[in-house]
Image 1 (cartoon, rainbow, N blue to C red):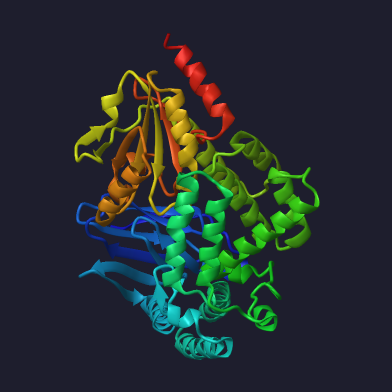
Image 2: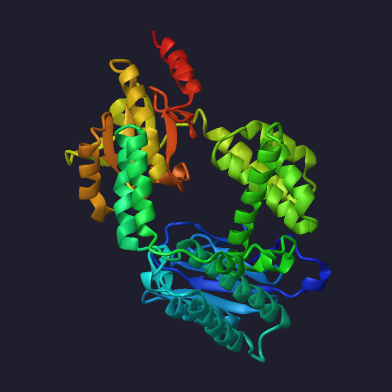
Length: 486
């Protein structure tokens, strides 16, 4: 018998139906007890996963695009569907009512991948070097083929309309990527990377910065004409109040974030006395009149401030007072108090590999404060923190505090990590936690680096988002804590 879960409806009455969505699936090798159903960043349902790795539930949800967070899969759901989403032989398979829509989306993604070849996160060199008219011809080719895919007589008008937005904003986003990467020789660009690392490792001198900038300039083989730069600019006529696009298109939201940040920077440059949430509220009030998008942008701003651990208490209090969406308020309360309660709790242990090949655990440092730096060799921001971290380590040498740096580099990059540690003369405990996968990482929700954590001599959490090495207040905090041990 299926367990039925009722969810609050977010869409207006014109977008919803009183029909249930039946969602099921088989997902092998998953350790979680529930499959989380997420819309944007809002948890909408938790479906129990049984011992046979099967989940099944009836949901009351509006039509839209949802994430099966534990599986890392996105699906389109619509009232009246009975969709099964399962992983078999490494591939994702859709069956039942709703499989046509989700297969169309998968085909559309495959089409995009075949036309816009990527090298890692970036467009391939072939596309970087392509002339604007030729690139736009590719965009037109994709658009034509994608619209043929969604023009299926059995799918709903909402699916077609929302997919139209997805196609349009994918083209804008990929064009923006092309515009940013036009004329870059990626082989020469890679030569600039080590120079930037040297700048942070060896001392931030004008000479090292000049070498880095010269390498960057040498990688730019050619540049767009001013006219081409303008016609390829997706922000010329960017609509910040397109609710359907915001709900449906991840590419729209990517561009939206860029536009929002640009407006924030412009507003701050005009008046530096306004900052924080007040600055965000000013930008929102002047540019966003769609009530749904306003609520989402306000919510996302709070999530961001929580993530970087800046003015968390003040931001929380301001949001609770001014927000009107009760569901969003409850989400923020849960996130705020959830992070608060970690302080004072026992930290999970970890067992990582040291540069000498020996295993090291958090419990090995009992009796000392432990300041943990989570980083990676590919993270420029992480490398930028290292000079301050070294200074901090020397300042507290011989005192009851252990500095532990844990790399989340991939296992295949272990030799690269060891070389980096040696060449950079890194001190403190240097450990690696392959890909950042562990109970420790899951407990602290490690999703970005650099990240700093402070643990007390008894293994209890002092700060799950500790101050960075270069922040003056960190030394004050450490001095105060160490004084209590004497």
